[in-house]
Image (tube, rainbow, N blue to C red):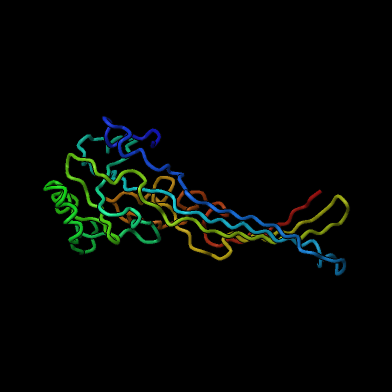
Length: 259
């Protein structure tokens, strides 16, 4: 369920909201390693006291979904509630095609997208199957749709609730490798100086956030621009600019006295 937000249909509060949790990451792999490099005496301790650490994190995509917070398709006026979840659109085709990434889901129809494109035939066919009301929303009220692969997302007819329910899509996942190099200098039995060089996202691998808001990018409204785009890194979109949470490569140097 979706916490305290107002559901699209209060007469059936769990309809459409009973879905994957926002934290439903199906597969996650973490490998942490620490290697104390063999050393020997001499050269002012430069040949000993070295340590190499590594953390590899791989996880599959988290869920997100289309939430129209601008249009009151259902006629319930709940889209204007302070804690409104929003309105659902209609989907035709496998949801897996709408995996988010660095670019928005392709948008078609100049009225919706402002890009001079025409509404493609697959969107028209999907709306035709749902009746004249869906065609009117597609061509006039909204004036556009989204299509990626064999999947289309179209606006619902006035007075209806769409079938593209909560969290049916997935983002592009999370892949990160952090590395640190540590050098210990022992001056006395109880006094050690430790130098640390830490590399977060050492490969500078691009990581894109989940489109959901407010904890994500906030690009989950199909009536707004950049729908389905993970246009930020996860740390900046949260906002939570903490080292190791998905930002670009960062290097941190530190000196610590241990006693």
